[in-house]
Image 1 (cartoon, rainbow over the protein chains, first blue to last red):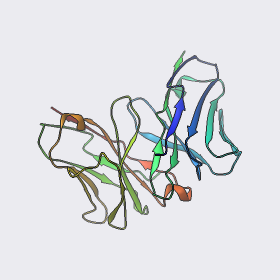
Image 2: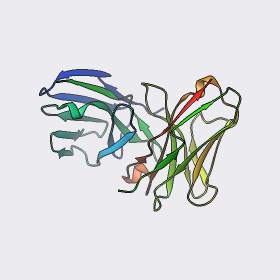
Image 3: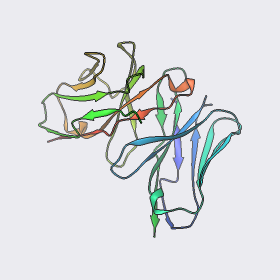
Image 4: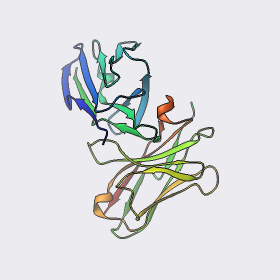
Length: 111
Length: 116
C-alpha cells in the first residue's frame, strides 16, 4: 500500500542552526501537506503544496514539492526554541478521502 | 479561528469497558475523521465519515469500533470493549472537502485514553 516516509526521525540542533526534514511517498501525490505538533499538542496544519516543483515560504520555513510529486522537504532557517516539535508530512491516498501521515521528524532546539 | 472540540481530554477506563469519545467538528465542515497516536509514534488513520456514513476505515477499525453523528453537531467514536493496546491519544479532525481536493484537516486537541 501507499507509504509516506520521513527522515530523519529526530534532529537536535543548536539555536540558530538550520534544519531540514525530508518526505518521500511511494506513489505520486495530488498534494502534500505539512503539519506541526508541539510537545503534548495536536497536529496543526501549516501548508499544502499542489504543483510539481512548487516552493512556498512562511517566514523562516521553506517548503518544496518535488518535480515528480513524490517527495517534499521542509527547511527551517536559523531555528528558534519556538520551532521545537514534530513535523509531519501527509499525502492523500488516491481518491479515498484519507490522509496518510509520515512518521514525523522531531526537532529539538538547544538554546 | 474555528476549532474542533474534543471531550474528555483524558479518559481512564478498565479493560473490557466501553468508552465514547466526543468531538464537535467545525460547523461548515463536511468530512470528519478519527486518528490515533500511540505515544511518540505516527498519526494513524482510523476512519473517515461523510454524509452520515463511513467513507473509509483502516484495519485497526474493527468491529469493536463505531462512529456516529447523532445530532448534526457531535461526532463520536465508540470502543465497545477496550483492550490495553487501545491506550493512545485519539484525535478528531474535520475538513471542508477531501484532502485529494487540496483541503487540509483541522485537528482537535485530542482525548488521551488510558486502558488499565
